[in-house]
Image (cartoon, rainbow, N blue to C red; front, side, top):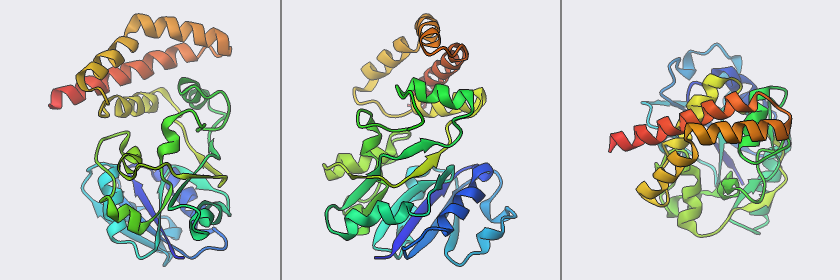
Amino acid sequence: MKISIILAVYNESEYLEKCLQSLISQEKVDFEIILVDDGSETPVNKLKFAILANPKIKIFRLEHKGPALARNFGATKASGEILVFLDGDMSFEKTFLANLIEPIKLKKTKGTYSSMEYVANWDNVWARCWNFEQGLKGKLRINNKNNMIKDFRAILKTEFELVKGFENTGYTDTWTLFDKLKYLPYETKAVYYHYNPSNLTEVYHQSKWIGGRQRKFGNFGKIIVLLRSSFPISIIIGIYKGLTLKQWQYLPFKLVYDWGTVSGVLTNALKK
């Protein structure tokens, strides 16, 4: 079965070359890469990466509209029977794709995810704090208790088209396939690596993106988030977890993370 990798990227030139090199090196699979540039400040086709000339890579550029719409567009250009959705700040073991799609090929399931997603920059203190904030103490970025198991990494194209792709809900857009299909993706052990924010500026922007997502309980949910992210609560949690984790940097991390979250909630509310 042919695979179409949908790679929606936005200002990820720092990681993109390594990402593409690890994808082109995949073993035992037939694939193409649909690279959708979601309005990056420096267009992908202007980057001087030799690998971009590889015939397996097809590049498209859109105005910046967010990853959900970029992925949906990429799917319309795909010729494969299986769609695989990845990010430009990831890299992959050589057997990643083969292991990810194996249950689909064997007709055990129609979609999969991998529980073997590791932090690529674990040596960075802010990257570690990001995991701590998500309740993850080790290098894994995912566990069976968080919502990341809703993320379909691979899915039959027919299933994706059946529900008309992702909804443009912001940070949680990748969960919308699960919401519409009403079943979880099948777990695999395909190994890959994903960069966490590596400085406080990145922490702020990523947490703002998270804060701006749609809330299950609407305005009530936003109020709860604002209370939990208030300055006094941030200070208390930051000091407590910093001492517990023996990581003093967690306090400034927590303050910036919650500041970003509040900014995201308020920005989203003002748009409406």
